[in-house]
Image (cartoon, rainbow, N blue to C red; front, top):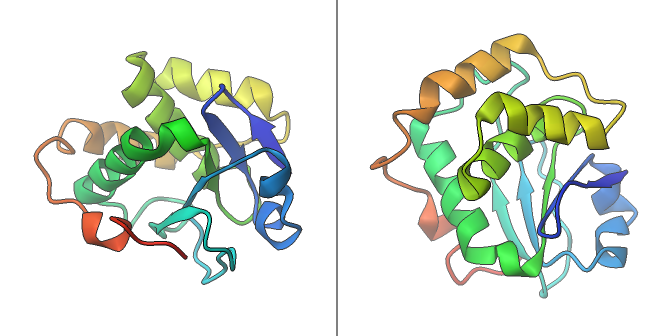
Length: 152
């Protein structure tokens, strides 16, 4: 399942990768926030893996910085943010990226993503975790080496 959020942002689940649905949408960059090693076996897509659990316990300010830098670098290629079920982690990260890139309120961005994904159910704990990390993400070291000039 893939949900189009904007012209540059798409949100989905793990099946979007296994069924190669992402290719039908012309996606050129994938941000994986799932706790899995699944990745598309293609050389034409940029890929960044930032795994964290449903409550964001492993999520750091540097992860948000990395995700934002990845989105800024590759939004012209269409970005898919995915987790396993496509209802919590990818929804919250998509909301974060939408807020960051478009300059809108994070909660409003979550509402926009949820409106495009009727199955969504972001955990309040994860939303609060990201809100708490938002202020700290600027100036944090990124995981740029994980995606810079890297193809999967």
